[in-house]
Image (cartoon, rainbow, N blue to C red):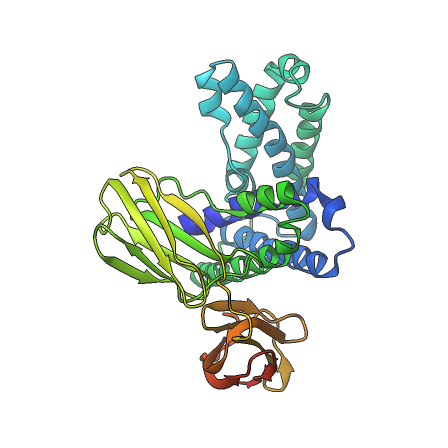
Length: 384
């Protein structure tokens, strides 16, 4: 599994954990529940493909579930034990068990068993201190031992090596892209909690963000959102003032600068978008070792009487398309399960509306012209 997929899956696992810990906040919200279910479904698809690529034995659903169960139980001990190791200055222990989700769940069966067993053995040796210190619960180490045994019982007999690994890797990469799209949709839906449950919203968005430490080619990533709605902003012009270097955010609302473009030092970032107040951030410190990520919220300027709404449906061969990306004049959104979308506060006049279907659908993007009238709704449908 490549580095990008590893970072994505680790981040999704962390985000799912925060969602589970705060399920009372979002259970009953149909849109959120739908995206959470879709996210887990896509994770399961990826697990099954990875198992086909890396495993030479077994292949049943019971085996997949047993492997996931053991990985979950290993992770819930390994992570707190890594904190315990740092708190007690036990660097040797920290180096041994500082595993991420991908280390424990994906890859060859024997590698997984060896890592789970190591977590078990170190957990057993430090069980009393871990439980007394509140790092783990009593009985977790024993539960991990049982889970390892359950997986070993499912391994089965060796099978012939698969000949279509290249095709499976391509399929896995496509599913990872689809997982990212679902994750982004979920974060968009969770914007509803930004004001009412800010601690939950901040925690879950941070958890879902991939750890980009060690990404060698990137120096600065800027993500733009509307301050009032949390919607990603397309078309923001971000300028590094000292260098006169300008880039424009895409439909994900993101601009990235490489380390080749930005050497180590302090910079000023100016952000400009029509109908929004210009933002300027100074003394942004960049190093040669770490990617800096900025969340920039732009505030809409006083535009009463100068905006309208664009809405419509997206269909492919007569069928509604969920998760299509629609953008116009700096705004971006995705279609719901019925293929419907809505863009609010679109500047009056002739605008270009663009539709991009999900990666799983083989169709080129479409652009249409729409005329927006102040205070009114304009319909712009897409048929692929």
